[in-house]
Amino acid sequence: MSGWMGCLCKILILQPGTDAQPLTPMDKLKETHKRQKKKSQTYKKKASQEARKEKEFRRAGDERAASRCSEMKTLYYKQIEQLENSQLQIRKKIILLEGEKARTETVDALESGEEELKKMQEVKNTDDGDRTVDEMNRGMVNVNESEDSSSIFSDAATHFDGD
Image (tube, rainbow, N blue to C red):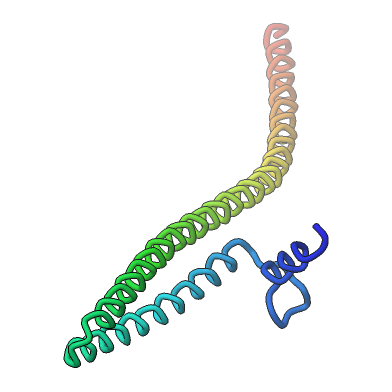
């Protein structure tokens, strides 16, 4: 983008007073919501001023001016309604983004927890392997001892038969 469109995009996307860091979608939505809220408040003030003027003109008997004020007041109320609908849509989007962010953080936490569990399991399996080798060594010692004791019995049996 070049020219005025590029400049306009940079102005809209960049935060004022920072080192040219782009706004996140959440920041953009919140900023837009805040702007629309201010506009809505301004229109409410203008609508109430028009209502006051309308009353004054009606008291003075100037129906034409009173009807113009009534039309302006109606237009302001329509603008307020549109802005409030837009604010509602923005709030919905903010809630959706926050929910998505929470879901993403939860999934990331679960994945990192799973990785930690796998590491712990690997360490445990290594320990289990060492325990298994130790048990096998003890078993071999027991086997050797039983072979020794059985050879003593067979020697004794041989001597017994010979007697």
